[in-house]
Length: 592
Image (tube, rainbow, N blue to C red; front, side):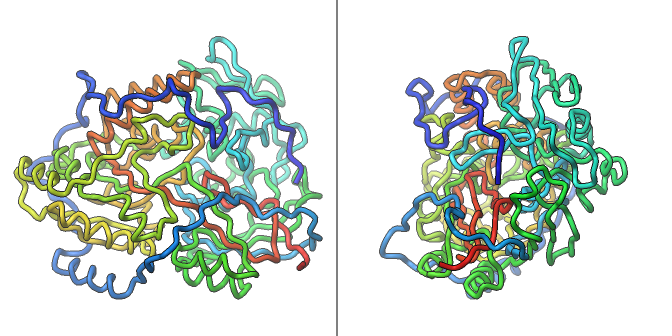
């Protein structure tokens, strides 16, 4: 599919996925806590106030864990390490395209609302990729490229004024013209909607206006380097102002954007269907008639459906199935490392819901940093990656991947595995051991295997971990409400570290599910976003990582390797390091 020409890269607006880190960007991993750093904010919970009862009582939790161990397949011990080589696209190349047809993709989880302003699900991004284009996107190398914008933003007034030029040939799926006023409407909704998850992603905006039909201007209180990267994700998905006026908060039930496909219908827990949009500016290069996203949460069933040809594409293949899929002549497997991470979120102060003022929770896990540090010290990440995932995934100790130009010695540093030291910390904290923690997890085989391995590991450090499996879409609501002690979920990742950190770690951030609050971390994140110097930003993010590893509101565990399977009857499918499976360019092709 034709795309606008890529402009030359600028230091502040693009990156190379595999760029080596400048030597000056590194810093000592053991930096001390700044003297003025504050502790989590808010009043402590009244001593008599009750916490939510665990969904699984301790006795039942033990029985459930035994049952899980019996029914969840275990990763077989491999004799050879996996061959991890990035394959981001199944190219059409010189294959003969068969125009039309309905492509079926097996989705591993139910997306949340199809609303760019409020969504927090990776799987929603899969669906929106085909029908809700962004101002910018990333390419296979991780470089930022324009989509609905025609060039990278131009800066003036010391970076406080940002102008974005727009396409003039685009139309929304409902026939509404795509223009600067439409972009302004979307951005203001992102900034002003009370339940928006995008406001903090856009930075300290002081104004948004249309200079003319095809130019948008944003003004800032202070420079904001991550803007282009933010607009390469949901913050940059532009919604039809006509549909927004008509649907309001229910926009996600019938979304209307600019894209090669448009929304048709959704059957909850079953499927989402989109169809080719004849109004799309590049409609002649859209090859499929429809795409049906079918919800199939069991990885082994997704794999079987791909091999049988009942679905053409499937995301998030299990590491237990990938070797067999790669050996199948009728299947192609895309694989790529991730900008993101999987982690264990500890609820410190999220009593009233994400985005509200943090209120300290009065439990040893939440209120005593030594208990959280002991939990982190009880986890052997290398062992988890090998035993649970056969070495396919990579260990993670921070939200910044080692391949990022913003990586430093501090962001690469991992808390040491020391179960005996963990026991000593628990003794210092004066808690009774084994200390009991309920961990809620997504109800799928790979996650349950991870949970069981964590359960066994932390027992050696003095913890008794009960596992509560929850459906993925429900788990998203649980973390937003703050209705958990500990919770295992991840983040698919963004090209700029700001997108992996500020929403999760800044006080009041839209994804700060732990209710974490530290004034020094807030200051460091703001300073990093205001700088256009890569080395300076990297050093500041390294300081954030050091502080977060001391406070442990979010214990980083590993990075998923995105494994996408597709039949050889389709091509033009891509998966990049942001984790999104891209079907906009997909087509059926004749067999070789």
